[in-house]
Length: 323
Image 1 (tube, rainbow, N blue to C red):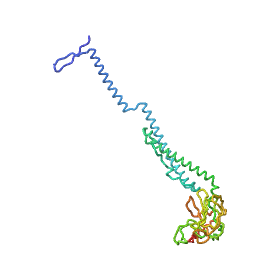
Image 2: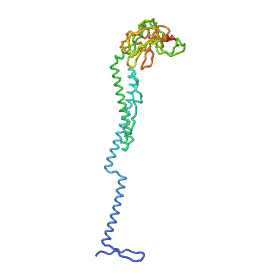
Image 3: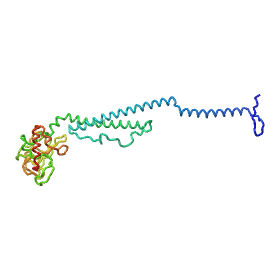
């Protein structure tokens, strides 16, 4: 027989028996179980919040290692960018200058990537800013390397054609002028002989009798043969390639046709007094990429340093041209 238990009732001031049957026991077991379950849940959540599981510790170690690797990669990319910048400077200021190649603007060398977000798939990663920034730097460097590779391909091609380029570069005086006495007026601001106003003279004038031989100053192809009563008068333009061209104006007669190939030293015509001219002479121009430059810089094959200085002195003395 089970032992009877009593509970004091303060309202009736008596002890009342407490039921201790099966229902009572089941109810107590259920109560204790629920309490233990709730306590266990709170204990688990608290432990999980304040302490990492072995798997989480492993993942955290892996994330730290990856972050360190990305930081090292980012520093290496910065070093690569410094080296690449130096290569680009050499390419622009040495190689492309030597071979008269067009400059590659920074808008092409450092062009970005338009269109959709290329790094959207990385934005949800841990340390997304570091990952995206490193990926952007890598893509930019890869594109710059591609542009630089194409630039070197062009420079290599020009190197292989260096001998041809030297033959085509204007390098002699267009008329026989060994004593330099035929040097009349040089490149720069001069007084126009007809209008008597200051104008920019885009070439060099050589005084010579009508019929004096005119020579092509470099290998090339005759681009234009024009007869005219005004301006340059009868004149020829020779395309030498590699960005060079030369103009021979106020000629008396031609010795070539349009499209004809010429070599340095070939007689292409004779000195005259046609067009806007006040006396028999040759107006000679050198153009680089269609822009006139000082022809005096292109007599290096037939002038010594002393003769060059003398020519510069003679051509600068005259403030007036023949055309």
